[in-house]
Image (tube, rainbow, N blue to C red; front, top):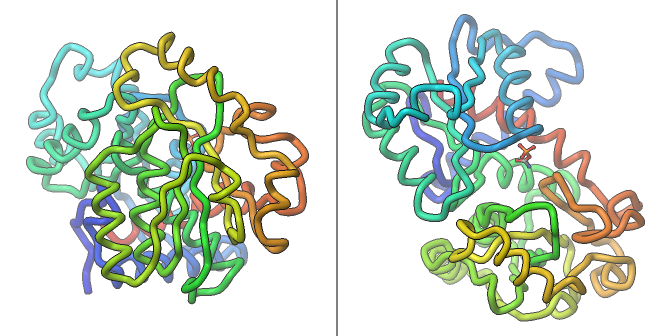
Length: 324
Ligand code: CP
């Protein structure tokens, strides 16, 4: 199988075998990084990183990753490029792909826009397009999450349960792409998924339908509940995080008024005690400490957030090395 030149926009665009290959390469690159073995698989290659939103992990795992692979990344804030003056994704894709070997985009804060935007770039780009988070999926994050879960529980995840839950956060209206990416990926890789959220926080129809179809095809479960307790019961992995109501991303004040009705949706030690004793706490980060999660949980023995964050480097490198 060759993945050279392939876009990576949603995990659902790739087969299970292709994602398995990415995880194998990520594990190998993790070992090589830790041993200090050179692995310059992308010598002299250039990747353009377009950000329409802020980032710590994604930007730095991609930039550090391509440097370690022997290439170079250009960091571009969309607001300081000609995109801000209305240059089209078609022209951006054609021109930048004639200068380098990959285009990565984060465009995650406007439901209905980011995924369409990067697919339009991809249609016209000669180089692969990598999704660094859109409105629909965050496939860089969820592949790292799957790698982390397998490191802890092994490759065979059948019968394991992940609770993907909404949690309260006052900081900003967070994208819907992480929970959507989790339910579409974990149902394909053997896990039973319990999705919990207050009624205002329904996920987008397409990823929900996709996840239902994957669960049917793979013989896994997808249940949707309206409280954290039910989702956490007997869970092996808990992943509580905030996201915004789909129709209120353009109105942050009203979105926060809705969120404030649900401040009790916090992951604390009492809630953790409902999950299995061996359960792990995950979060893509940044977490709103004291709101989405208590310090005792995120800093406690069940938390694997730093292992998860580290794996962003190794999975990003695998995806760049395979596609560019
Ligand atoms: N989890 C994640 O994507 O982190 P950043 O927003 O810092 O990139």
